[in-house]
Length: 337
Image (cartoon, rainbow, N blue to C red; front, side, top):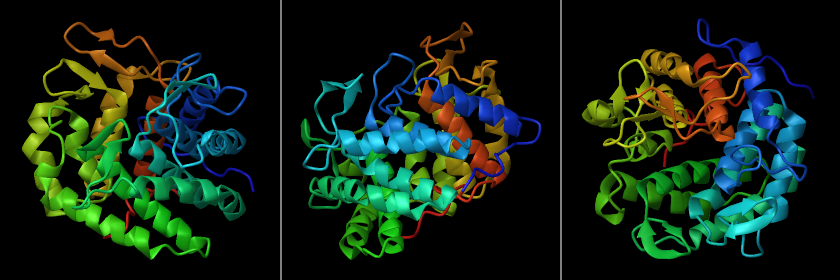
């Protein structure tokens, strides 16, 4: 199996641009497969998977495999991962449930793009153990507590991402002949909490991720999702530049903007998604990498970092908009509860 066509978004990015962006991610990869935020930076298990997904779409399949093998090697016996590592050393030993669920999304995505179900089967024990760990943190009303260091606290963004990962895990289980109906039931309970029980989640509404993640994660779609987008658009969108990370700071960010692109595309608003995708290209560098964000009051890049996961979000958004690889619908095709 060899990589096929790479995404291109006419008038915005060519397939060669996408390849350069994938190569900028690969340039930061460490010898053990870890994908840190940037060369020499720390690695967290969620952004590591996001970056691996970007590598997959960009046709860098060997590098993506190495990244997923790193995930399997660094998993702890209880199915969790440390929240932060640097060159193999643990910097934060807490376990974030959203981080631990995301391997399911990455492995389903890799198998869908490459057709390599054998590799997915080899990683299945790690996926299964991670999901079982996450569901061990599910509360009485369907919510999932976000960290072993913060028992009893649930986050809307994290739970929305877990909702998506659970859908991927259920689909992967079926493809591998190991169906997990109990995971589907847990996902239904979580989806109900996300749609109807806002009081279960800590108030993080100043963050744009809390605005769009219920859509990106598949808990909301259709008119209800459209209404949510319109209700808060003015709080977060900066015309011509992208979206804010937080509503009360003059800072637009590439990853959040591209995740919103994915959410809008998943909900059928292709035109707005394409416009926003074009607007955020001011963060692109000539080597294909992307600055994390920009303070629009003074035009300065901030932080002064070009992050792998920002580049990956751009690649995934380009694939969703162009519908190029077999995995372009990884967020759009989230199953109903």
